[in-house]
Image (cartoon, rainbow, N blue to C red; front, side, top):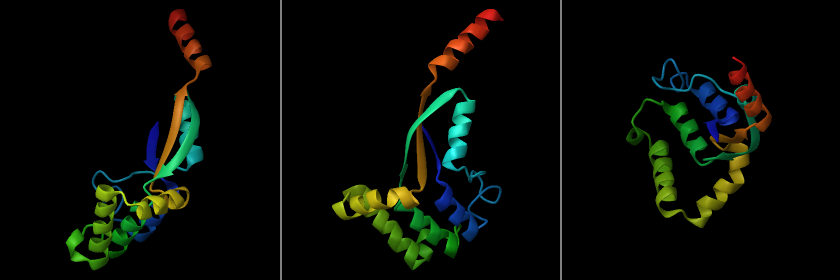
Length: 135
């Protein structure tokens, strides 16, 4: 499986703050890929893309708020960021049905992460072995 930032939530973060992404953010995201582009890159690497899904929808609004008020500010400096952060902590620790249900419903739309599953293509693997033997 390959996990990348999902296009829409990431694009919103980039629109809200240039401090969110590289080069301003050390270690920040450098590129945004659509699912189609991820699948093409996997195929180019000799893999056969399979299923996919989005995850972490509840994290997208958190990062949108952070980007809107200053991604480099401390969490405690802003009421909205601090409160939403506490909600995420509660969700992670307690896993209540309310947030679990909300996340399941929102994941396809605003899931922060895109996960694409892939497997080695039998045809490509065979060709690669034949190419090595021929060399």
